[in-house]
Image (cartoon, rainbow, N blue to C red; front, side, top):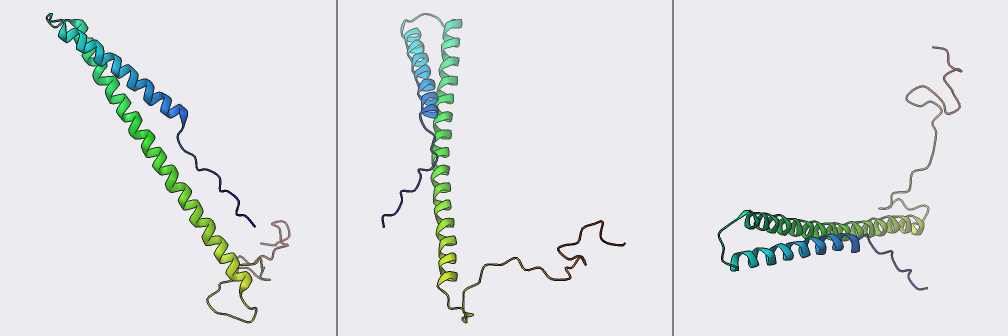
Length: 135
């Protein structure tokens, strides 16, 4: 029997990449504007300050968004691996209980079953309700 394909883990996709690319394009535009203002050779004006501020802010935003996207992708891969490990562990435990001999008390811990004591630590039995007891 063929093994079913596991679902793909969540990965930051096109929307996150869109914002990273958009911030990078704005940064490139501000860098070009700043370089044009610098090489035209006039004194520093308010346009120079505005271009420099825009360059710094958009460059930092694009770098921070890129780092955030990379961290999300890495966390998604770790989460998917952890889920796979948990499924493997639970399946192995289930298979070990199913394959154990009934009279064997070896290393296999059976699954707990719902067994009610006639007198629980609270003094109530499963059929009791608050109205049936005299306090």
